[in-house]
Length: 269
Length: 269
DNA sequence: TAGTGGTCTAGACCACTTA
DNA sequence: AAGTGGTCTAGACCACTAG
Image (cartoon, rainbow over all chains, first blue to last red):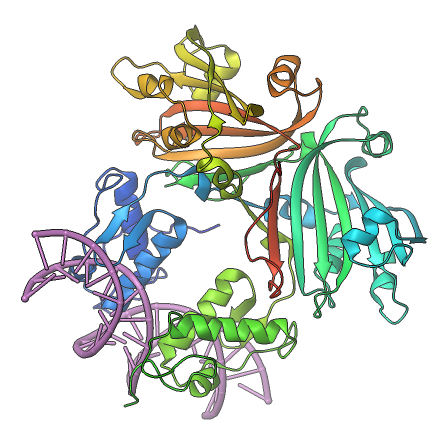
């Protein structure tokens, strides 16, 4: 929701007491981005040097530097020491998809339910053992959940947790009834780092049944692996997400005034 | 006035006048990240204040500020004005998947070929017209391509371009024979911004045939929409990617020493 | 009121590129 | 040698939060 604020980039800053809500470094970065977007600076062109920008905007070196760093982060420009700052071409590689798109959608939705389908302690088979990096046969807590909204199933989750009677992790997991709680548990106390993978898969019969789609339907499989402070894997699981409800969207290059900045659509009603 | 830069570095820095390749702000950020990772600072804890860090590392306010901004960007800490800097919990939402993972894999691979399956001028149907934001029936250039590596098909691409006899876009497109060229064309001259969407889909018969998989197989569908400087859509297309060759992976939280930072695996041989 | 982070200055020296 | 970006200093004032 980065509000680009007022269109008047007339630097009412600096001198007078009136302090703009938009810091100088942001105002400078946005001004330059606008110029690139409107074709004042073309792709491949060299931008004015830092000294020139400093003079134009009447700020100190650090401030113009900070503005350029922002454009650097956004992937809008590149800098080469000794040469200059240049407008970048559009690059597919710079596209980043944020998982937050998905999680944001339903966090504040009261109609979202997270029923537990089954829970039990099962010995780790070869696959689970390799994922959890434990010996085969190690007792693990196996959970199956459904995430549904307004009664419509959205995700089917399988999760294996290392069983540790001294760790309250499992009990906490069993009591989760909201998506919020579910996501928080993943980010919970003991967790220190995680690895996430997205794949496209064909749903097997049971998953398809729970999700209310025909078997073999395509779905996103979001696999997660969480570790504690010692690097020990404590949780491995997969979310199977109905393909018709999930979509990852992103924008590259300079967002036009009409286009949203980073907002997304995903799985309408 | 302390010497400059190279003052008391707690790490293996400093040395005999030898300048470290790691700037002070990075070294400070990494040191703090290490402490969080090793449990010195726990989730939810308040970090030392900027004044304390400034004293500990013997640097100026701006430098320690910059280090904290890096941790802020990485999603490792949060700051609240007037309160302090705090260690963040793991948050699923912070996960970002980079498309570069996919494109990097084959850019330097000489065995990658991009044969053109068909090319022609066709009137826009309802779907194409809505995507390209042009009237139905508008002539568009329709291209179909295969991206293959060592003879194994990886992606099947469909693309519609606005036909403009004065724009060299189409001719350039037709001469593309490498993946590098293909990706560059997307980022090409006229393009100013793009929108990308990833979905999971079931492959239709013809797509499945070209990709050498059974019909109805799951696949990633990477849809792209590119605009020129005026915001006019000039290209809409979809890449259908074999699910067994594509995977998006990311790491959240503090990467452990053994784990790779942002490197990925995707589609082994 | 005291302490925190947020922003900014007006310089400096450095490493690198180009000629 | 001249010009570029990269880093850093030693302060300053501000906005916000809390007791």
